Image (cartoon, rainbow over all chains, first blue to last red; front, top):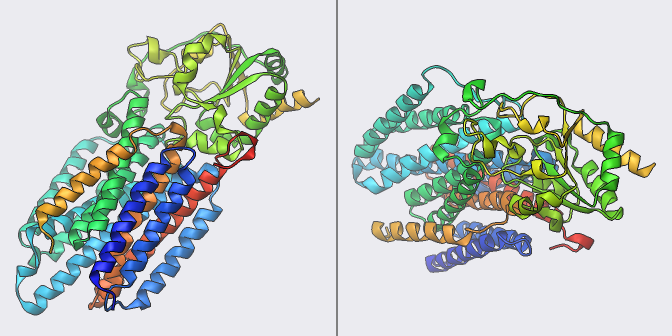
Length: 466
Length: 97
């Protein structure tokens, strides 16, 4: 038999590998090895757990095989454009697992109570941990499923709002609290309260994500990521396992940081993202702009690009929808061969998850030296000959700088309006996701290239080659 | 059981450690960081394994097995997808980083 100390020691090694792995994930050179180290840590933790005394492996094997096949297949088959919803889905799985771990721990202790007739097996601490694992895990699970649905466009991306929504949410929250407190006070006889909390937490997860619009999904996904870590921590408190507590806390903290970065990039508070139903209605304010938008043909765009010394691409969610990243990279390469300086400027909240555009451009083999952040380009924007905006809208909206009544006022943007020429690739003249008008479309130096982004870029590439 | 105070202490320290570890992340790594840390949250698999392997009640084993399935999806899927993503991040000239 393996002494418990050995298993504890293995858990310490696993925790250290997670820490080093996370550290390495935050630098481009080491990220892939960091992920590998963290995976090794996980493997060590799993093997150590399997070596615990008196383990029955039958059902474990079943679970590992089923889960391994599903997870492996999804990871292999998923397209890079589907990455945001995949992260959401995996996250939900983690949340559900933590919920069920909390529940299973309760069930074990509850059975003890039945057979021994005493409620001594429950400390208040354990009961609180169990109920927290259930609540956070439940919210993470269904919240992630809704986020997945929105990102995969199986649900409408617009915020779903109805009268009295906040009140309903508050009532659900109060009910959860009431049942949770009942449960903690007399855990030995309140199995029903646990089940109610399971159900209500799942409802709360749904209710809290449906009013959030697709453009705010980067924040939601980061926040749910944080929750899944905290759920694991709570499960760790419930089963008295320090590795769960530590690893969960690390993930919880990293999720908080990402959430913070996303909120800052939109100049909005977390509360505003979660509760405002941003972009639900046109009533959100902001001036309406009109004027004559000048359109441009792919041929003329080619001529402008061909003569340019410096070109930036500003990709947005529209590029992901049109799957235009490969065409864009091809155009970028042709421009470079032509002696033009090419940069891709990625706004932190462009797309539907943190870093979404970077993943797509990396998939299209854009070298990461060419990917820059807004603050690197904004100071020298006047020297840019052509800014090609591909399916981005709010992140280049100058109303964020000038129009105090605009809902996005104060959000740091990419100042493409100060470039010599701006070419906007857009499907139609509709406003962007947030339903906010964009004065950029009507500026002197702006040209609109209407149509499918992939086709438009393809046409320009065709001109270059002919 | 460990002392309650001690494990709360460890929890708080781990939160601060996490905040310190990744306070500065270049935006191009946001997605891999998120999916990589998401895979770590699959650590709950340890609890799932214990429930599935140690339960003396049918219900505990059933719950444990469900938890093992979902935690494994989270772990396996999370790490593989992160690796796939990071494999695409290349420097100019094709050298992998």
